Image (cartoon, rainbow, N blue to C red; front, side, top):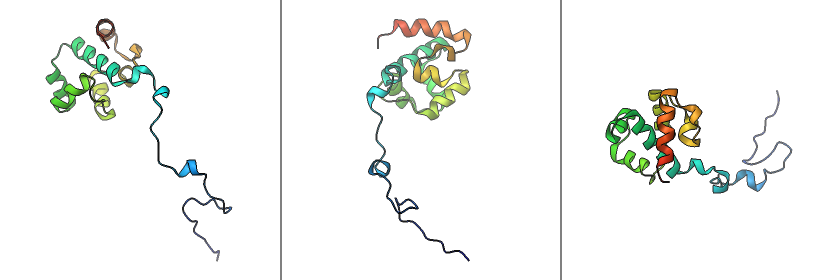
Length: 126
């Protein structure tokens, strides 16, 4: 029968400890690592343009994705970020991709929406 030993938290089998950077708390990514297209303001512009291209009200859009109306209003105004949960529901419901929402990639839109949304996004002020 073999003897098993249990390691202390942070120990490697050879007795060394994990480096300090490995055990520290997770840090937020530096703003310089994030594309400007991923900002709440830019995402909100694309969401508003998408909603207008679909020709539905903000309340109808929020209801369709199951988002609280007042909270969605804050998302669309750029005061709050859009959670991945609601973004995925939008994608499934309207046939768009996450790359459009978070990165501004218009190739991630169906053809019938792409030209309408593109025009509306460029007319809006960030």
